[in-house]
Image (cartoon, rainbow, N blue to C red):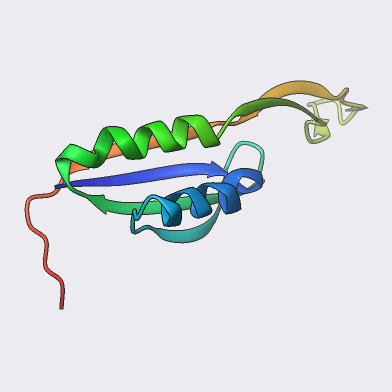
Length: 109
């Protein structure tokens, strides 16, 4: 058995959740916030049999696409206390960050 933790962008969460339901993959969905962009994410926690891990990863790969987005960095003050107006920069968002871990023991009550 494996434990899969998938962190995805909120825009993909409903579609991924529907794909999991259609495929009979039990998943726990939790709202989270990313540190870099301070944007909403969704974290899925999935306990799955070893032989279905590739199926779960394929669903995540097909459903969660990365995209480009513009963001404005926060205004910074330097030592001279002068402010500089930051320009929007293009960053890559979306896709998925996935961790697959072995499960030593599983109990269900």
